[in-house]
Image 1 (cartoon, rainbow, N blue to C red):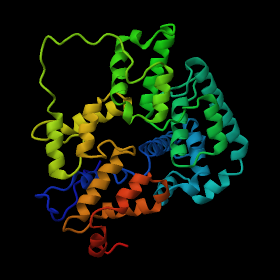
Image 2 (tube, one colour):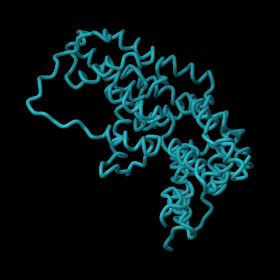
Image 3 (cartoon, rainbow, N blue to C red):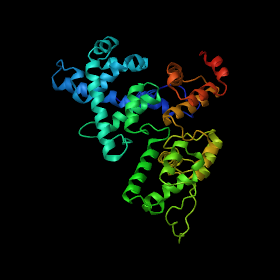
Image 4 (cartoon, rainbow, N blue to C red):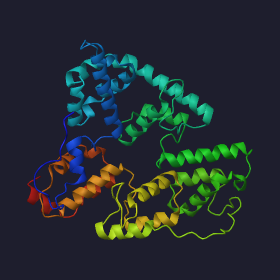
Length: 386
């Protein structure tokens, strides 16, 4: 394999070092795609399977559509072809799906898609009958059907406003909270609490397993920040901000130093104006990127203390954005670039063009951030972009 080298040219003000994003783009132009990483992973899997199939048949005429595991994904791409990004069209063309082949695949779709939908809904009902909900992890496979991935796909389409009302209604009839307005991890933790309560024969929250005490207390501490729907769900279980929850932990016999994470986060925010570092970022030797990643995971699962959440939000209101973290990192790079004195890199030119192209799919707050990016007028004049 030929060795890949970093782009040649000036140092762009980085002391002779190219930005990590530029180096990654040299290795893989799609390392941080505008669309979901799951779509990109599926595309790579289909491409590799296609190449393997062709190699196994000595360059025979094996069709990509014949690959069993990927046929549903390929059918979805044909059905949604008109809504995909132009660069996704380019990638699909590399595996044999063009506008013509997508149109040709449309007629048989009505006869097969209802079967797939009926099968998926049947599996969702089976899962709900067994567990009382369909907040299934993405890895869930039921009787050979990838139910978790299918449900995740439906939620994504619903968030993009592309899920039909009939399908959304069918899923809501199985589980009213199948697509909550809050993180799915919180909903899964709530259902674990429901299971524990049912196993305890309907006893009061004071008798929940010890492992759930802390989660309940975090919800009580963060009550005013919870969605009204979350409050209603907890109240139905007898949990309110003032409900006694088990025995308080015994006083610690040893003292432990306070985590230095907040101090380093504060120093980073003062220096950079945000809390969106790379996962490998170290601040004065402290692994700040890893620490913040862990806090975001805890926040999504509803286990982050209200005190820590409030402290981080005071440093950067978007430290834990509801959209993909990779998008927010690129936004901060764009924001830093347009406030600088050097021309905007080509990668960011392409990124901002992609945001304009898919504007209607962005979260309203993403639109607000892009619209009010500092010095945007100055940048437009400097870079020559509209």
